[in-house]
Structure formats: C-alpha cells, structure tokens
Image (tube, rainbow, N blue to C red; front, side, top):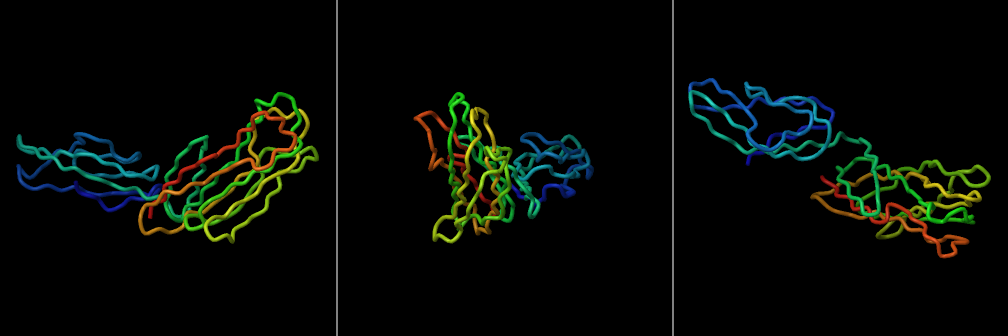
Amino acid sequence: STSRSNATAGTAYSKQLTATGGLGTFTWTVSSGTLPAGLTLTSGGLLSGTPTAAGTGSFTVQASSGGQSDTQDLTLTVDAAAGSVIVLNVGSSATATVTAGQNIVIPVNVDLSQRGAENLASLTVRMAWDTARFTYASSSAGNWVDSNGDPASYTNNLSTAASGYVTLGGYTAEATTASFTLRTITLTARSTASQVTSAVTASNIVAGNASGQPITVTPRNLTVTVNP
C-alpha cells in the first residue's frame, strides 16, 4: 500500500491522484475500504475535504480509462489538531487513542446507586497515571457537592519517579443515591518516539461508613494509546 501525506483533523485537505496509460483520461472510484470521515474522492481523482477525527484510513482506489483499469491500496493518517481536547467517555474498562500534545479531559465518575439511601460519610478517590506518558494540566469541579455545598477537594502528587496522582475527596450529603462526577482531571499526552500504551486508573481508597455496600468509581483501568 502507499501512504499519503498526513492530514489534520479540522483542517482542509486536498490531494490530486494521478495515473498513466489508458486514453489519458481517468475515472476514479473507491473500490474497497473507507475514506477517513469528512473526505471524498471525485471521479476526477481529487481526494479532498476536512477530516473530522484523528485516525488512520485504509482504502483502495481504482482508475479506469478506455476499458482498462488498475487499483492502488492507500493509507491516510489524520493527525489530531495540536492541543485539541479529547473528552474521554470512560467506563469500567475503557480505551482511547490520542496524539502527543493533546489535552485529555477525564471525568472521575462515582456511582452510589447500589447503596440505597444510606449516608456515605466520606469518600476519597485516587487517580493515577504514568508521568513518562502524561503531565498533569488541571482539575475542575464536577457536578457533586458535599453537605456544605462545596465541590470535592483535591491534592496533587506530581513528583514521584514513576507515577503521578490526584487525590479527590469530601463529605457527601445525606441520602445520596445518585451517580455523579466527582471532579474532572485534565492530562496532557507527552511526546513519544513511537506509539505507546499506558494506563490511567482510579480507585476509592477510603470510604467512610461504607458498610460493605458497593461503590463504583470509573475509570478503573483506562487504557490510552498515545501516537507520536
């Protein structure tokens, strides 16, 4: 297969495909595979448009002329816009793919719905990441407040050799049964020479008055692939 020069999400892209032989005039089609979202191929061989998402598309084009035709496998990589923000829709075993330099907004979600109307006196959650792969950017309040109307507190530990983490916590209001976002944490993917995979995890390390009832915190194990 042949690689095209990279495109960038949100930026107009245009590339004229060429062929030789036949009658000199060619009709172009995509014979298999899928173009990256936002791009089209005209019958005259112009591959153009504005890609909508980062990723890699593999497809086959066909050029026809004078009753003859030939095909070519193509690969086109769409890079993420520099500094763009990815909001991760995390779950118990979520995955995501980002590009170095991107900011990643990760909501730390807590589900107390299985606890009934029992009061949870306090909750502390630790979210950790590999400092070789990510740097801490910021933290912002979620939609949860404690019994005093204050958002969850947080402290940072960014100086450990292998991992950094943020500790979130506070006191809950009585009869809390809802699911909520404790806080959102923004990380920035570090530069990398080649594609790497790294984990971002969250765990409830302290749950006062837990009484053995389930507390679900996500992301438990968020696997992030970082592209150069």
